[in-house]
Length: 393
Picture (tube, rainbow, N blue to C red):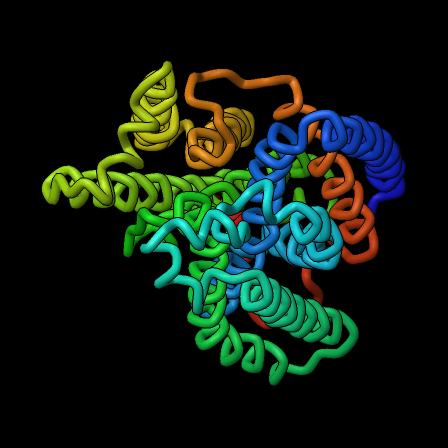
C-alpha cells in the first residue's frame, strides 16, 4: 500500500475511533437516563452497520461465484468489512442486557395477558432468542474467516485451486447467509411487533443490506481510485459495472418493498395493516414518501445515465444518497414500533450520536483491517484480464 495513503488512513482511523468512543459514551449516558430512547437509536445504528458487514460477505461471495471483473475494485473493501463481525458480536451485548426494553415477548407479565404471544412463546423466548443470535454470529464469523483466510493464502502463493475453493464455497455460502440473515431480521426487527408478520420481510431487509453494502464499497472505491495500485484497474469501465449493479439492487429493493405493501394492502387484514398505519401517520408518511423519491426514483433515474456511472465522483454522491436513505429507511422500520413509543416523526439527537458511536468504532476497525492487506488481491488468475479490461476502457 502507498505510504502516503497509509498515513491518510491512519489519520482517518484515529478520528473515527475518537468519534466512536465519544458517541458510545454519550449513548451510554442516555441508556441510564432513558433506556427506551437509547435502545431505539442503538438498534437503528446497529442494524445499519451490521447490514454492511453482512452485505460484505454476500457481495464478495457473489464476486467469487460469478467472477465479474467489477469485484476486484471493491474486493479488499468487502473483505475488510466482513471482518468487523467480531466487533458487531461484542456490540450486541447491550441488547442482551435490555431485551425487556425492546421486546414485549421478553416480559412474562405481558405475555401472560396476550393469547397470541402465548402461542408464540415456543419461538419468542429469551433463551431461544439468545441461542439463535449466538448461532448467527458463529456462522457469519466462520464464513468471514474462511473467505479472508483463503484470500490471504492466495496472496502468498500462486495456487489456482484457491480460486476454485472460494467459488465452490460461495454458492452454498450465499444460501446460508441469506437464511441466517433473514431469520436475524425476523428475530431482531420484525419481533418488535410480534403480532404482525410478513413472509417477505427478511428478504426485503437482506436486499436493503446488500444495496447499502454495494453503495458503501462503491463510494469508498471512488475515494481510493486515485491511489495505486487501485488506480491501475479502477477505470470508467469498472465503475460503469458497479453502477449497473447499484441500479439492479435499487430496483430489487424497491420491488421487495412494494411487493410487501401491495400484498398487505390487497389483503386488508386487521392483523397486518396496523404496521403500515403506524408508519403513515404522525409525520412518518413523509419519511415513506422520501424513501420512494430519494431511495428509489432519484438513484434509479441517475443510474440510467451512462456518464453518471462512468464517473467516480458522480457515483460517489449517488452512493452517499443511497446510504443516507438506507439509514432513514432503517429508522422508519424500527422507531414507529409501539414498544418504543415514538408515534410521531422526529430524528432525535441520540439517533445521530448512536450512529456516529457505532459507526466510528466500525470504521476504525474497518480501516485497521484494510491497511493490513494489499488493496488488490494477488495471484488471482482473473486479475490480469481485469487489468487489460481497464486499459482498454
